[in-house]
Image (cartoon, rainbow, N blue to C red; front, side, top):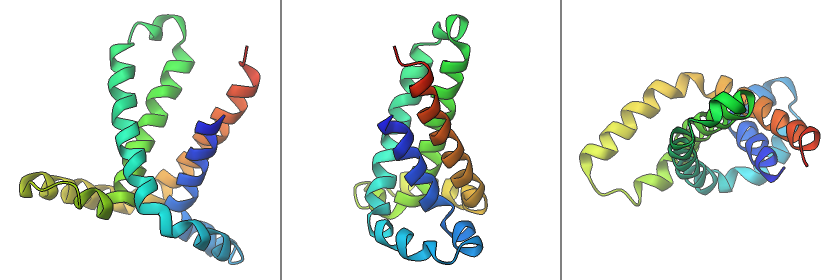
Length: 138
């Protein structure tokens, strides 16, 4: 359940421009969590990479729990993408290799035009994770 809330918050930060354009009063609320977006993004990117590695190592679950496995992979892809977009500044402080920083910059440049859509997808996947955790908890 906590994972779904995390994805929703990350999605709101990613789609903040789209949300504020439709609901200007949301600017104040988003502004309260925006100072933490760098760290939230960095943690999310690393968490997403770890999750993708785990999902690949657990490929056998695809035959028994395909929806759960697909949700797992989709959420981790969104975590990596939004995490990089939101946490690039924080991540750069820890990475000292110029080639790695250059590759990160190129990836962020490709993802940046899709940030709003990725944020909305993150909100949707977070909501699905909340619903799924209530439906399938057992």
